[in-house]
Length: 229
Image (tube, rainbow, N blue to C red; front, side, top):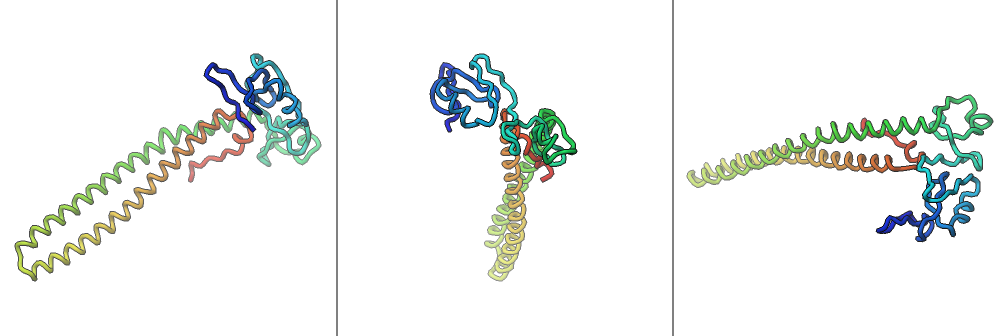
């Protein structure tokens, strides 16, 4: 299925083909050309379609189709089951007596939670871990620098002493390098984890930003916060 695109002169194309858009389905929030209107109705023949001129389109949230009742859109959300339901589901379906709220209200709450998560990630968590990442990087650099200094000094002293003393310094240098590299490797591993965590949080922010522009309630509704992780 072709995705809606637009040309240099802001000419939008049909979501089913590459022809220029003349019509718009308010119910499904998709662009249509004259040729594809019938195909679109047939593709979702169980649902009502409000086809209007593209200039008269209304940008709004798309209510999902009810999986239990053909031709019905979900206008509410079942709090107990955490899923969209239509009026028939509430009155005579499997959600009788359940705690119900308007799907638009659920969507609004989800959007607010998504926005809150995005703000906490960008304003608190990411800066915090970026600062820690820099500090750990500096500690690793200092440790490596000190290790180099110890090695250079050891080489200078080695030349001043006899063979037996030189052997003692060889043992000291080996032990010093072994312990220092062991500590550096441990800190380096934690440093890498911090970097991966920052990358993962930036990926979540990008996914959240996509949800702000999504018109599919089902995508927003299944959003789960990962801040505790």
